[in-house]
Structures are given as structure tokens and as C-alpha cells.
Image 1 (cartoon, helix red, strand yellow):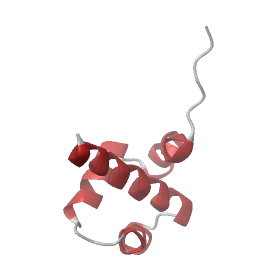
Image 2 (cartoon, rainbow, N blue to C red; image 1 turned 120 degrees about the vertical axis):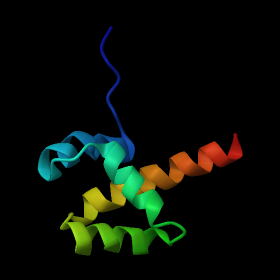
Image 3 (cartoon, rainbow, N blue to C red; image 1 turned 90 degrees about the horizontal axis):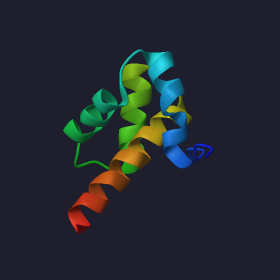
Length: 74
């Protein structure tokens, strides 16, 4: 059976790890340390403090916030 294609923010993760040399878990932990903050403030932090591109920063923030929201609702 063919493996399901990864969609959404997680589809950026291999490229993010390769480009910035850190595992996604580290980026998510960094985002969580800067909470509470609005989505775009977290994106801006990754861009300005870590030189991340907008799409990659947005993917990490969106995935992390969605993960946290799902955990809070569980």
C-alpha cells in the first residue's frame, strides 16, 4: 500500500530540518517558550531571531498551536 502524502504545515518539516539544521521538536519547544503570543508575533520571532522564511515559520507556528489546542480540548 502506498504511503499517504503528508499535507498541511507538516509537509514543510523535512525542508525545515534540512534548511535550518534543527529538529522540528526543537522549533516547537521554542515556539512554546514564547507563548502566550499571537500567531503572527510567533512567526515574526522565528523570522527575525532565527532567519527563518515566512512559509517555514508559519508552518511551525500553525502546527504547534493546532497541536496545543487539540491537547487542551482532549
